[in-house]
Length: 186
Ligand code: SF4
Image 1 (cartoon, protein in one colour):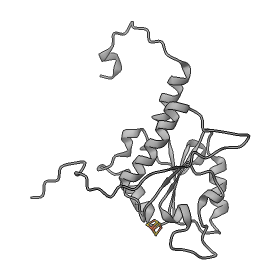
Image 2: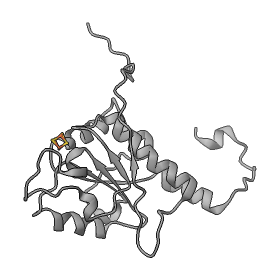
Image 3: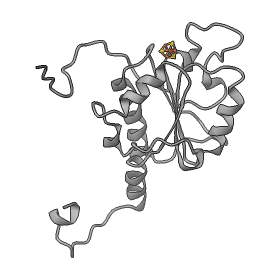
Image 4: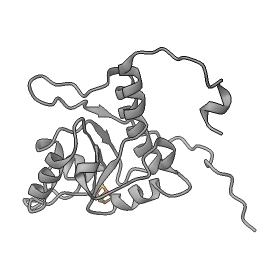
């Protein structure tokens, strides 16, 4: 099984080193979930068997920032929580990426109050904004794939003396789509 059964063992493959690095990095992003509210439930659903984020090499969601390179902010961020968010971000390994999942993480959502951060991008560089209240798992997967495409083509995140966010916005698509897995109800 595996690639060695499809290719003869004595073959030589030539490629650029950066392509191998990008390929490995793209397929082994380890998420650091920062789920504070209802969007976190959709984040959990993304890891379930129906949406199966393991297909992207990302089933290892861990709460140890030093072994994570993709922060997913899912839910509103309170002002009191902000130092924790920033500390976790700083502890993550480079190169690292950030997804802001849902209206609350990106803008504060309906919580236009002094106690809620009005967009986590004011304090950490956000690479992908996933809109919705809450976004569906498919939209989060679109956001993840946007980062994967960037890693594939560009490799490292852009810097100009300091880390520059990618600033990608996933476009909401309300069109009905077939279920990813056929349902049989008996
Ligand atoms: S965007 Fe909506 S679903 Fe997500 S945390 Fe805010 S209120 Fe909850």
